[in-house]
Length: 383
Image (cartoon, rainbow, N blue to C red; front, side):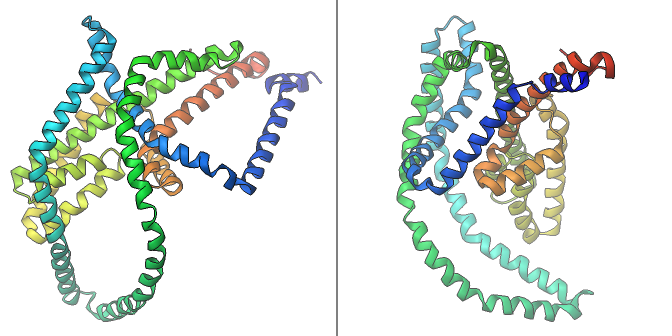
């Protein structure tokens, strides 16, 4: 009987019944929502409209807030520091775009026009190699199989075209969302930088006094984890892009600037991003010459060595203690659930879930030690 009482106290006593009732009500609410979800379509439109600028503003907030705090230490008032910072970055970005846009546009246009020819040359080379290798007896069968599949292509194209007209209707809403994001993003960022701490205090006050200390600790941990990840990952991606650009210039690879930008953008996604980024460079190098492919391999290995041993350890530190396999699984799951947005924000989302889960488990360990520690042994808790 005493053991049962301890277990009931461990899991929360009578509060568990209230929790179960609450979860049942949540489940009923979700079920009802699935039946009448069309009623909430306007709310869905509102959320989908404001979500992009808010997300962009939070990303920029984590990047710029340390700079604002540094300016405050130099006795520059926060308001003026934010204004100077936003105007300075806007001017710098405008100048960079005006200076580099013509060359980038020319490179991208040239790459788009010539890339199909690179793929055709690669296909011809692989075909010639297959016909002269041990795979030659199977080449004709494989070629016929592919040809048969291609014969079904017109039917598939017709299906996609019919659904494509529906997608065209969404272009206007996409353009509208983009314009709204660009216009509202600086204002949201300004108020986040100005009143970020005030927003946190207001959020904490929404919770009952009993849970405010726990809420404050969870929010601080989330702020540290997500902020460190966003700052570190963007800096690492920028460094990778710069290193690859220098390496591409040294080996004389075509479209060095464009390929480096692609690598920097995709490297925001850990592990999978750099792998995707190298594919266009590999295709161009293979078509160019085997020696160019070898030089590209040396550059890639050198950049990965520098990034893995010097850049990431010093920039990312040990804030995000996530196993590489966990990161890959999170990216795959988030990508299937939410598409590109899930791939980009999957790791920060996982960091938030991990902080909340770790804190709940910490509370469980303390309760276990309280009720079972003397009899069954204690959890080792690092306070």
